[in-house]
Length: 326
Image (cartoon, rainbow, N blue to C red; front, side, top):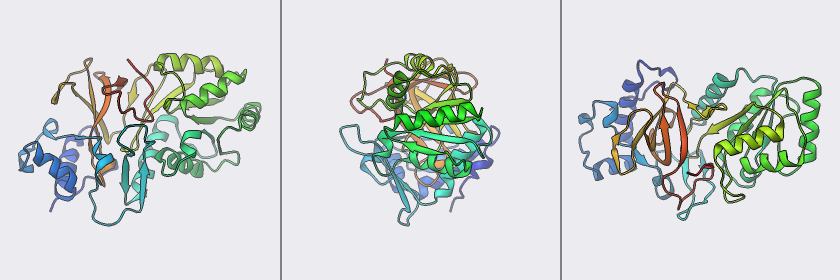
């Protein structure tokens, strides 16, 4: 019987050790992951002694299998936006406290304590469906914040504008979480100069508008909101951790999350910094599902461990929160 890693005590020094603990735990308890390992010829988990030997599960398995490392029934499931051809990804959750602690620690590490800070959500495409992990996250951050003006908006742009102007008049700091197409629509209709708000774009053009690069998106949002405090969130249904980027587009990870890049033609060949490859993610907060996910995103690593997203390796199955194309 193997033990679980101590997720939120993970740091640079013990990351590899905790990743190996997570691998052994999930090889033992996650039937889908174990079957995938055996399918690629890994029958003896004891042979895995280094981080780079751990197999990454292709993200598409979340659409076709129940990727779980627990035997009980799920207490909650998160669903993707189902923009691909196969259907929705489903992320089975047993302990919601792991997700809540993960995204809260990550957000406050990037933006500071959020108590009494107003949070506004312009997330129409996510509000219109059930089971969004993004809505769950923002709603819980609002609960922590406790600000009386917190709220979600579908298309009530006038009400949102009034709330923003009121917060600006009181010189109160606030956040606007927004899906990209909705932020662009809102910004085009207003003439704003934000001094106290931070915009966090979550991606998500999803066929609503012509695909644009992240640079073009940020420039448009800066012009529309009259602010250079535009941030980007990188997250997905299949992960319980997120990464945030400032203007330079370099995303930074929590201590329990790490990005590895593999060759586009050889998923078992990992690449050094500055090379473009497939984004593989170790997310130890995924201990109840699978911590080792091979995405369909293209990225580039910096020597300090930050990363940028360059596009999609397979455009036939566009993830809802993907925005950029190359």
